[in-house]
Image (tube, rainbow, N blue to C red; front, side, top):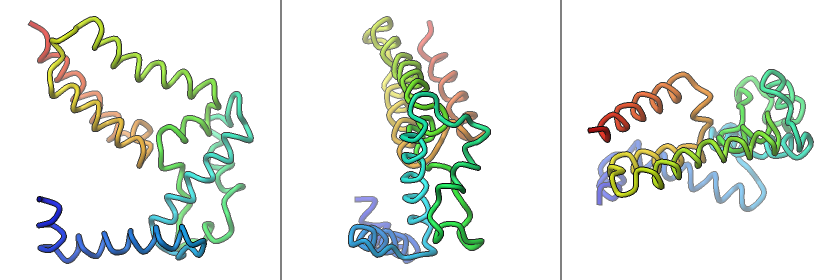
Length: 168
């Protein structure tokens, strides 16, 4: 209901939805529209996957990732108008800079924390804590959340507050 109201009540929101639909249709048809931010994000994820596959076991290393991104980026994504983006997906980001070994480690640590909490604290896990983890994991698909100061700060503050709420 809220999204319906936003779409019909705010022209800027409607414009963003229409631009995103246009970008997705153009991408599927194979004729991407240059200059749109969505295209840059998609290109960054594709390039990140290429780099991860090329450096499968150990990745490129975090320090060389930007250099590898610029080396592998398609010419239309290298212009000054569209700055080069790091992979806009936490999982692809980890895969590109640390390979499959780092990706497995990240999965074990992140999902291990959630599973550990679920197993050892049983039904006492608060609804907000579960919801928070769903929100953060959802953000991993659209940005490299844990690689920014605001992302890690957001995660740590709310994780600690919600964990503290769960203690007697």
